[in-house]
Picture 1 (cartoon, rainbow, N blue to C red):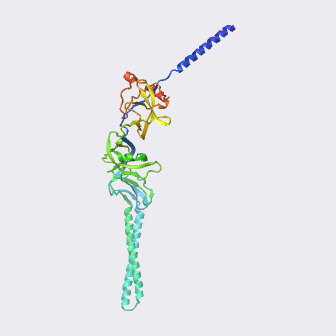
Picture 2 (picture 1 turned 45 degrees about the vertical axis):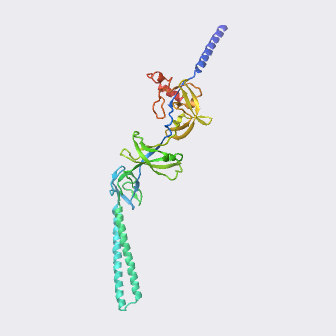
Picture 3 (picture 1 turned 120 degrees about the horizontal axis):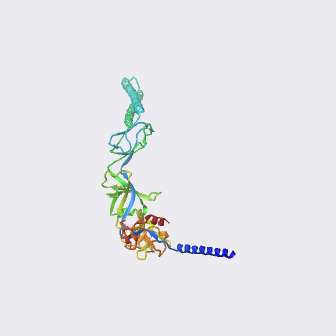
Length: 397
């Protein structure tokens, strides 16, 4: 009985050890990792720069009443096209009318006092000729007449001011344009000078961009400049730099730059996203790579190079240039046609066997499809179905 039990235990132990050995053998199989590749093209990366911005009007003014009061009417909304002299809003005219009536009454009183003082002076002048009054009495009447004359002139000026304020109760456009903002509503009490609407002239449009202080010289060395709308990237509008801020912004460390669009059309709407593209002299041996292609080796930049013959990757040191919105410029270290790994670089080792990612064929610096990589599944059999979901999961792992 004991011998049978021992035999069974030995048999079970052998099975367990055999299964463990198989598991270890299967775990030792190396997984061929998929990688995304970009084909290097030299000379096309250093001659262009892109700055994102926003379409804005060149001339824009905040309009408000020149007197305070309660808004009783507003005739325009955002986006309304207005003509010069068109009434945009109106204040309650009751208080302005009362002020005008009071100014008229003050003018009548001042005129009466002045006429009386003038008549008194003329009578005393006649009495002085007859030696009935002294010269000092005549001087006193003269001073009274002059003071009342000044009060009369003051009352006339005050009435003119009140009449002007009556016209100030209507807010009119001082030029043709479009209303871009409304900051007050009917029934609101506003003070003198408070912004009610914002008016922009429609004939000139420009792009507002922020340029880092280490790239401001690119604006001066650019041979050509154009504006491309994010909504319509196929149309390029010629442009030129109109204004560069004299000082850098203390928070963002960038210069505010205004780029004028030379031939605007109705498709350019205010607030739209636009890219300002510069064409410069360029760097003959420079290449543009995605930021995800960079790797650090002993604190120095490097990239992984894929060899189609051995299907292995090797690490190569490079010299990087400026960082841009669309990638990083590689000044040296790459050759034309090199296949650079652009995804999963931190999971690779020197000499590791990899395979090109089937879902995304290699592309050059201009974004065009590169020739198929020799040895890749797509090159061997173009009709083969891609296992993109599995490859994406492998990349994420």
